[in-house]
Image 1 (cartoon, rainbow, N blue to C red):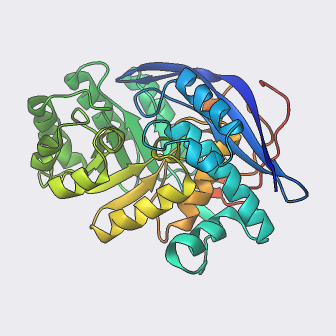
Image 2 (cartoon, rainbow, N blue to C red; image 1 turned 180 degrees about the vertical axis):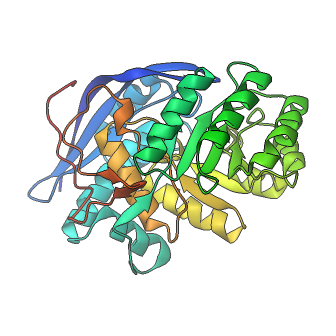
Length: 351
């Protein structure tokens, strides 16, 4: 049986720049990957490289082109060095396998990792993502998100100075109900002294967690910040030093799992299971991906039992997309496609 891999580049602009401590994200470039084999169902995957979390664009393309000419595509891409490329290949294989088994990708992943599909939820809780900006802009975005049904907000920090961040976060907390969870993501922008000051100032605001306050490789620093009144999450540390080191250093309460950066949907669900076993709660987020990877991430989150709100409601951040979105967002939850496979159909737009 001969497999054929088709690779289509795409480029999509964001509806407006997303301000982070690492700079503004203005567009997403990547590749749609389709794997077909004789008369069996084809499978589709997406590679959306984002340097800092994954390999660069050119390295991703080279890995995918090599996979297209290899006898075993799965073994020709290394999740450790080219996770975005590996994500596309693994997603396409998942799409095919789940379709062949006549079950959703979420059910297939749950069965593969946990042994039984069990009761896969029909929807997953999500947070609203709010970039940097003035106090007024941030409060408007936060209240609009709450008014639309979100009960969890993720605010970007680290780009305008600590005092400005504290003022913005306080203003949001005062503007929304105490029952609304607030997460802060500093993207590794602070040093230990700044992070400690931030936690001391923000702890009275009852935050759900502070994500990546320190540089990715400062695991001991993250461990020291735990227990000061705000739970600590790590994101970039996972790509930089790996889960084993994070767990050994006791550096996190929450592990942010990006399937694109981890190297595929199955690897992500398996990692989430390892994290839970180590007493670290997993959260699934996108890397501001197009519809194929974004929907795949929804299936990943649904495959994890009792997952807390995830960063999956990111479609509105894109100006256009690669096809119709099978996922709807309502009342702070995203629907999980229930048909066989991943459940995405793409068009030629933006390819």
